[in-house]
Image (cartoon, rainbow, N blue to C red; front, side, top):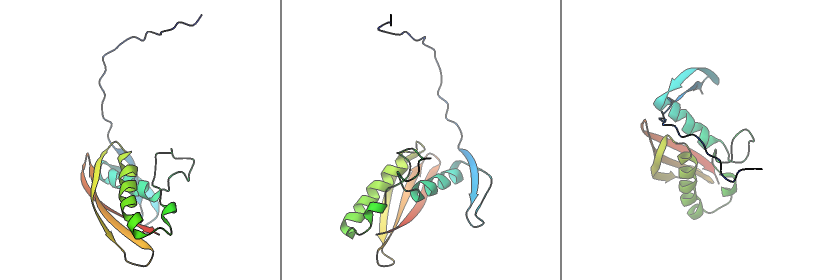
Length: 134
């Protein structure tokens, strides 16, 4: 017979934040070499999140990355506020990111939107940007 309730022992424990420690991506040389911590690791995480198309790679969970493919062909009046929402949503899935604001949009070429913004992290504020083809 299966009991209707299960008792678990209670223990006092302390939640400890682990340091941000990851491999260093050298984008100029296309190498992964060495390690980074804290703000530099956060910059890499933001870079990776914003360049990973959500739902396209089975290696990533469904809450990792950003959706941009469906923005192709949409009007600018739809794309800009939608990009703001999607960037904020994608980045705030990372527990080290506290918020995203100060969005500015530029249109360097036809069908290209360049967006710059501030990411507030536990390591300080970071300026970031992304270009999206629409």
